[in-house]
Image (cartoon, rainbow, N blue to C red; front, side):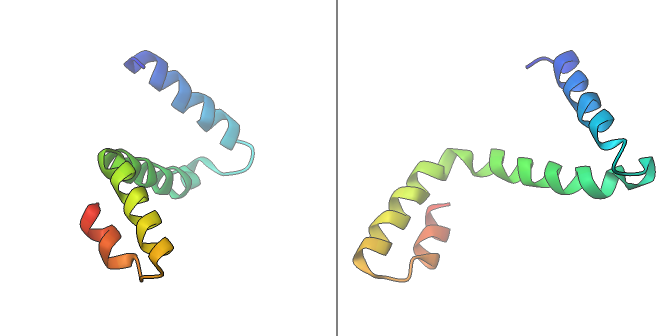
Length: 72
């Protein structure tokens, strides 16, 4: 996705929000989604390993939180 396409996508979302939110409120809506997307991108390389570890630990009946953190 090039910069022009991304910009168009962002503005189209802003246009959709225009009816429900005031322009001054956009940041409260957009910022959390931006952070979630960033976290998704950062964690993407380890997602497969985390899901595999989660499956192994839950199948074995072991608390999985610490093992999953190590994999991520």
